[in-house]
Amino acid sequence: MLTRNRSKSVCSDESLSQGSHSLSREISNVSVSSSTFVDSQDSAPLSLITEDRERKPSSIKHAHHLSSSQWVVILPRDALGDNNVQPQFIKYPDPHSGILRQYLISADQRRIYELNKTSSQYRSWFIGESVQSDGSFYVCTKMDPLFFILAALLSSKSIDKFTTLDAILDHCSHSYLIENLVSPTQMSNITDSKVIQGDVIVYRYNKEKTLCWLSKKVELLSSTLKEQGIYVGKGSQSVHYVRSNKQTSLAEDEEYKEYASGMIKDYVPASLCEDLDAKYQLAAVDRKRPIEDGNELPAKKRQISEPTEDYSKGVKPVAVKVEPKLSAAQKALAKVNKKGMKTMTSFFTKK
Amino acid sequence: MSSPSPPSPPIPVIVEDIDNHPVLPIHSIPCQILTEDGTREARVKNCFETTITNEKQEGVACMSASFRGRPLQGITHDLPQDYTGVVLSSGSSETDCKEMRVKSVFSSLNEWSLDSVPSADEGISSALKWIDIANAIHSDVASSFTDDGPSQ
Image (cartoon, rainbow over all chains, first blue to last red; front, side, top):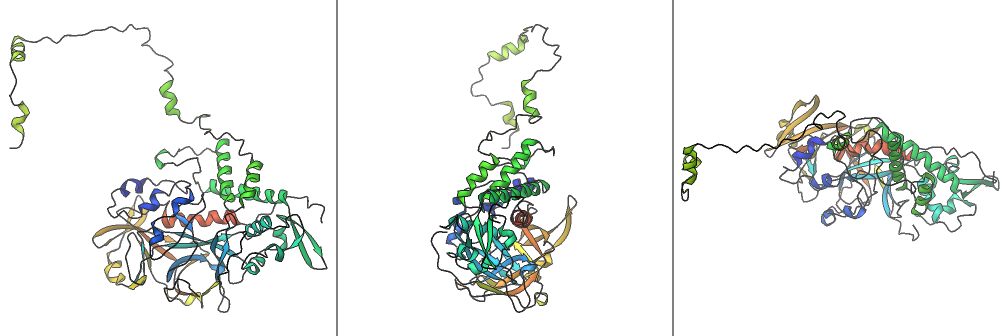
């Protein structure tokens, strides 16, 4: 969906005889249902079963497995440690869907990164003096560990009781790693807390706080999207129709908020998504495009409206039908039987 | 989330002094080059990199090259400052890899496409754009919720 000005590549792409990465082009623009992502790559030797969040640019997929022998990855420098400690890839349930996904824990075990993959069947790498068949490109991006805690809280049986963080994450593998990622201050964004027995902190899920925290995220994200000039309008959009006026109307603000909340919801368990919608009253918002108001689509209006001063109105239309006058020779010609005659132009065709 | 899954062990990434790894030029090529083991030696420098010429298109720097007689156009992506590119290798093509090693590093990469400049909205460009968006989604925002409830 991160689309703007892709005019250049659009037309020339059709001429690609190799069909070079047409797959990603085709589906790169819109939020696509996850089924689209199970593509032919599954049968490839470097099998990567992929399914993705709806709002991400669809060419970027979340990596579930790393099955190959070599990968091209970019990662934040602070994920790398010194010689003694190493960053590590772990598989952990996705906070939204619960599907196991690949994440990277920084060497200092203070940060977690989501591993994203962008790929196309028809790409390979040249690396130094070698070829790598798999053209996938992996990007590690920041991930808020609180999303994992939130998912664990909501799926826990004792949701309305005070429990330790340890107990909240009990049923997840690698939870000891996740536990280290959050501070009590961060925890206070989604829970109430108590200190018992001197230094043990226990937490209880607080829905209001959580919704408040999520809406903070929505606001931050929608302003980031706006700053980056990323088009978030409904439906797919070709660059040819991108409006040039950069005025952000109120309706556009709504669109950004809605889009941003969609992106945030991709990291939130489904049970909470409805509450987030309710908070934004998005369900109540008329889903029809609010495009008719204001100065949108001036071209269409012009067709319908009439000019203010129309001098042609008072004038009666005079029907004049002029019969072409034919000379005697032309009349004689018209009577000639033309059957079997060649046309004049046939003399000039190539023999 | 409800059913616990068999934990697969974490895969450590062995870095070993990131600044001393070889910095290799890296190109994303718009075709699939099949190799038996996933990777293979190739004379990239002599056969591909010598064909690269720098040019400007609509004021934007880009490159053109030729690969097997096909015209390629490319752009260079510089990685964000706090990012580094690594080529990781598991050393074997087993399905379950036990560890990964940094084989080489890069701070910029070239993306090529056939007969047109790679679009700014797809592939590597859009992946790099995702970094900023992910930072916004996942930054640590403090909930402005002031009422801490009866518990405190």
